Image (cartoon, rainbow, N blue to C red):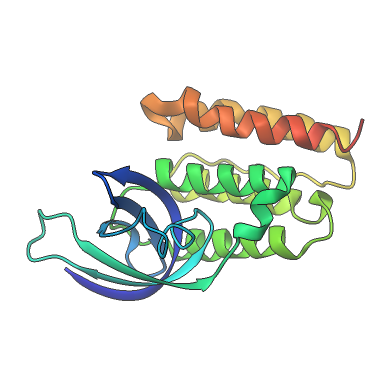
Length: 201
């Protein structure tokens, strides 16, 4: 496998003393994983932050081997992690993407929506500017994986109704997408939900 593409880093975990295993969302190859040598070092640690856009060079000698990944930062979303609401939204968006999508199956609409959502979180002056896109992203992931119905995207203009619609979406996410890790993953969504509720308090 050889792949060069711009990708969204959606997950990273330590491997050994200095390396990391990262997962990337690409437009043409979907979700891919790679071994990043030195991923926990001073140079690459700020790059391997979920939500960042990176230039990815992925290479493997065989289809069964975990590819080696080289990454360069294209766009950092790390400054947003100091703000509670954007940080919670990025955490949940990336966790959902990494957990729900099967590897090496392209979902270009999911890639574009994920990138758009992360850009909206970075650009909007408040959560009301991206909250609708966040729920729209959840609905899109459900629909693309074959579990979505004809659910209208909630309107953040009516905040209390929006939060109620957000709560109703938890059940299909739990049942269809998150598998055995659903409690850990839904904890990230619960943190986001609690912070969104403070807006209308």
